[in-house]
Length: 499
Image 1 (cartoon, rainbow, N blue to C red):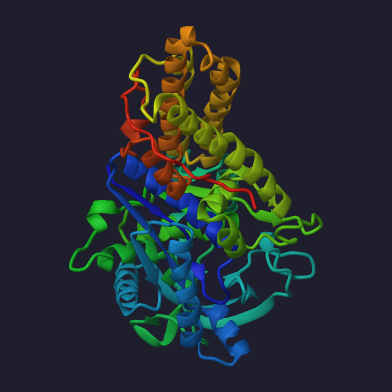
Image 2: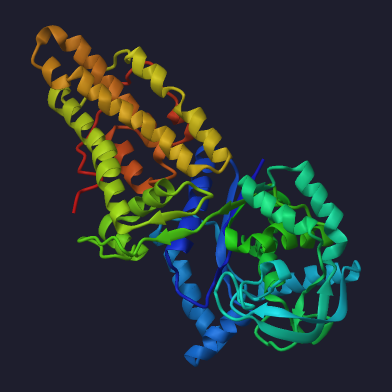
């Protein structure tokens, strides 16, 4: 079965920030891991360039929406290699090929009788590009997301018969209880559905920056219809001369933030049903990263800037911290202090130092040749299950738990070094065989956790696996081998040097 993973597409009304990196890194971890397992993977990300939020931001800057979109889309696209993201395609919704595909799909929905003309009046947030229901309005008719006063909008436009899909959506949530995760987000979406769905506007008459409605060129499609369809339209032209829709749709995993839950868990499956397309297999909703501005740090200041972190510590350090610090799916605080603690104690000390001292001991006492002897059965028993455990967590899109499963083994290997004291064994010729076993066991343990970590910190693990005299980073290589191979280890500079 193919594995298609998507991030939400990011608004170009501002530059990339930590939240964008967070979602994209999570998607990349899943994509890399599934490629390790030999799956047919397609990973999509991109930018959402139409609609009122972008038009308003461009107006405030005194530039055209296209100028703003071109400038900021380039920044988002440049972010991907910086964070070591291996996306297969980067979609821009201003791409004429996307526009053509949106128009075609919306004509299909219109001709199926799911779109009609009407008049709408309601409270609207221009920054969300969303008409708010009574349950979604904050105190004093404000937007609960942005805190700004909502405006009353009244206009004649085209409507999507969302109400017609009430029973279909309830059935979807009943029959596929894991369709939206975590459970509290599923319950939130289901509660919205059960409260009674109303038809929603699918076009705007006062905007020109968008995809024109084919049967009414005086209007453009409401930005969410344009944006949501990107997950399907991209497959039509992501690979030159091929339509990948039948190969990859429905998506295996669509990652979103909790602020766009309604659009993805309610509107999106209804739109797909109206177009005669399958719904995605799962929507995984993550929480907010909260900044703790009160904790100061001598080395980074009080704002966790992803670009500064990568400039000083590398992309692997940022990737690890974001997947490690906050339980994926929940809100959580990130800070410069938290980053420095994780970097120093876990990356530099736990993992980096374990790798360096293990390689150095083999170089010093065995001329760089890993002893080809049977490994310690106690450590084998404790590490042999890591591959299955990590794979299960990543199948469930629980990267934080996957990292903890790996770190449990890294901590065990560090304890093993202290328990066996190889530096003591090396002084006693009678303990030569025991030293061989300990060194071979440590090399094998480091190799296994390195393979398991590759999706999270690909640059460092690539360096380390080569230093271990190995080259296989496929998932089958995360399996414990009972006997050392005699591989030649090479010199290893500190993987995570302390500043």
